[in-house]
Image (cartoon, rainbow over all chains, first blue to last red):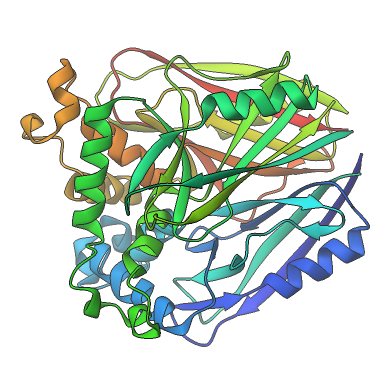
Length: 139
Length: 139
Length: 139
């Protein structure tokens, strides 16, 4: 069994953003030389997500509005977590809706995707350096 | 390491539905001959889910009502994604709540399940052909 | 390829609770002897979650309040599932928000975690014995 590991680093200029990381993960897969197996891609931080959906600007706007409605940032005093000096409790909630990780099949040396699947890093508490882990196992 | 891949095809007659695909995945596992490993089952489309829960009609009704409350279909004009000519923005939101994929342990040639676990395809934008990927790796 | 399997048992005294199971999973990893691979940790019951987030009491309170707002327990009659004699329909909904499972990279014989990642068992219908499955595959 072969295994491969790489960290991808991000520093998003805004509090929240969606970044398409599909080509980064494809580059990892090429480097790994793995042809058949599973690729795990996960946020290493607990106020961020990795998820698969459409690379469509309008949809990303809809996600932003929807997540803010489900788990509003303000007032920050509504969350006990923010009494620790943080203001990011909402980010920990939003990340649960969007998910920590994706597992993608690797077939014939490619990410085995449907027609519109793209991998995104979902940042909910940005403006600092954060990481995504890519771990690929297989043969 | 052995690996196995199969696509399951669905054409649901309604916009939304939950389809029990456990026996399809069990059939894949038998075909694979894999005894120990991991089975990934994921929607290949970004307006559908694969998830594990109970095969109980009342619960599925509750999911339907709840998801429609969290991410209503109408009015379709509330979503920027729908300006692209689509009317399925809500399906992309609902799918994030229910999830894209499950990873199931394979032990002794069986899906290693708790007492009530069943795998479902969750369709949120049906009435056309869509696919689920089954990828099993192991020995 | 090596594989390892263990069930972790829980009996939470309250209906809902979050239990840090990171050290249990680390103990499993040591027992497995696996150095490189993937660890799957999943709830075996469909009214419970396994998820990764922060071990911070205030945040867990925020999760509790937020999940109860998104999927209220009462009135129990609002859910068709509860007509089966259950009162736990809300638990099946909450579990979908928090997730069934996590997949964690194993690198150098350790759980390959970011700085604050901890694994939790999320119980939404406790006061009885329930299980989590740990399955580790690799080399």
